[in-house]
Length: 149
Image 1 (tube, one colour):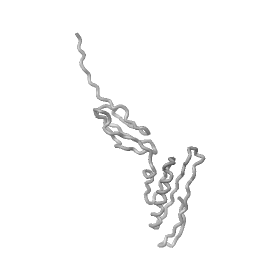
Image 2 (image 1 turned 90 degrees about the horizontal axis):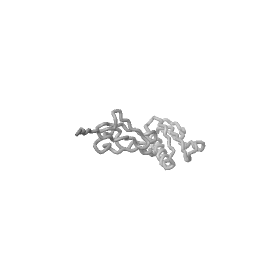
Image 3 (image 1 turned 180 degrees about the vertical axis):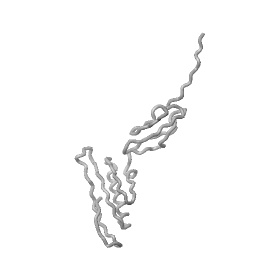
Image 4 (image 1 turned 180 degrees about the horizontal axis):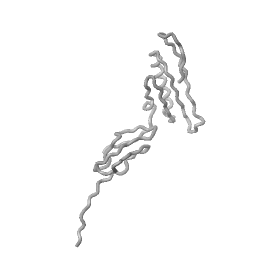
């Protein structure tokens, strides 16, 4: 009678790629191997960017969530950031956030120019450039001017 020796194969966690993202596992997806997770543009990673395969699957749950207005509106003083939004739900939040920024700018006697495109439809021909005008007066420098939002 011929006896077969048992063989062991390492546990394979399979793909770690979340919806709207990619996972790169250069050394494979088996036990104790790591994968680097990234989200597609317009999405934010929830969870760690590096995960590891263990005996029951990937050690962390990751997902890619669509960015909200508060996530993408990272304004650094003196720098212009391009902000691209197409979600109707974020439209009002984005406008409100920008208006709050302008109030802070006026209080500090500093002026910057911001702009964004509001897309309330899927047809690119209906996109509108939002333009809100801010008039300001810098008492220290005795100058007045106007910025567009």
